[in-house]
Length: 266
Image (tube, rainbow, N blue to C red; front, side):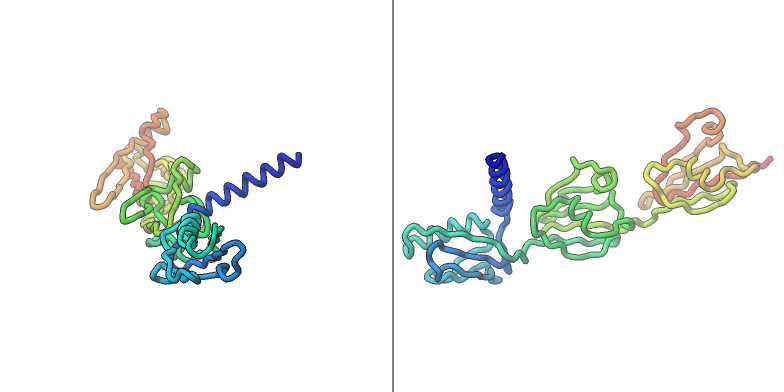
């Protein structure tokens, strides 16, 4: 049992070290540099804006752009002329360089510090309320290119296949959901606006508005929909749904739809 626990702890430590080794050092990061057995070469230093650090006996050395393991190797090579068989360790104590940027009208814009490996889902869960954001039109930018579009399936439906790792410098754009209501007008008991729900149908909206009045011409129901500059009218024969169960007429709605039920002239 003890042997098993020791193996488990060792494996977790190795996983943690592997993840830390992936981090790329940048300007402003704080590093603990240590050369085993040499007190003068064990110190804390911050990476300067030019990406360099000053090491006693070596002078200025480039640190930015290296992983901790990579910088250890670089310092080991450079110190061989000063120290016999140097054993160097580099630990990132303060991370100030790794950030992603969140912006758009649907979310409070800000900067998110990446202190560990993070996924898009982890970031979305950390930034607060996203009800006013249009998740379907949101996207992740990396190096000026859209890496991932449409966060709806990931964040609302829990489809983890849509999750991606975020890296320093990424930008997340989340626009405002311009209209999250549908509107029911005409010959219904209570004409009203209803907050849109994914999968909402025309009959659900009509029933939430109290149903048809006795003067309604159910087969003269229409949906007015605007997509960008394009406007369209979708005719709905609602009586075919209620009387004959023809659910092909029960059209799924989109945010901003107007449902208009005309009155019968008889």
